[in-house]
Image 1 (cartoon, rainbow, N blue to C red):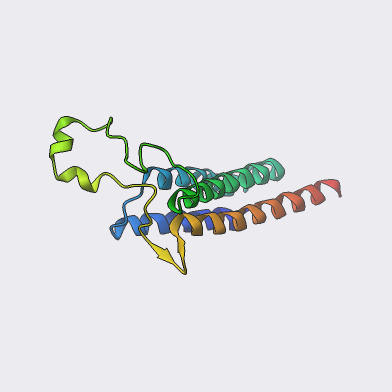
Image 2 (tube, rainbow, N blue to C red):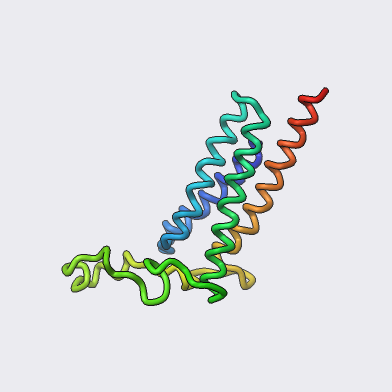
Length: 152
């Protein structure tokens, strides 16, 4: 469980490094970060709390971010529509008149349906999904191990 929590910490750290390098996150990228934060907290809490519930919650957190990553990948590849606030034409209802006239706002609007970085044909959300499914498998293995230990 600690390993899975560290895996989420590594993925979250990587996201922040990309952000520091100038790859601003879109709204769905931010959504993918929250379950990782939960998984990190669960990895730490595994030292103090009952292992089986923590492992199940960790698996759910990892699966949540993985599924958001799959959804985001589908939006990027035009398999389905994304949120109107960050894909397609974009929703400008959150912007003021001053924002619309300012050139500074261009850095604030990041579209969810555009790939900003890819490696081997997979975008950041795709990699997040792939590694998060792997982390979910680690959480599930930890849950199974905890269940075996409780039966002994």
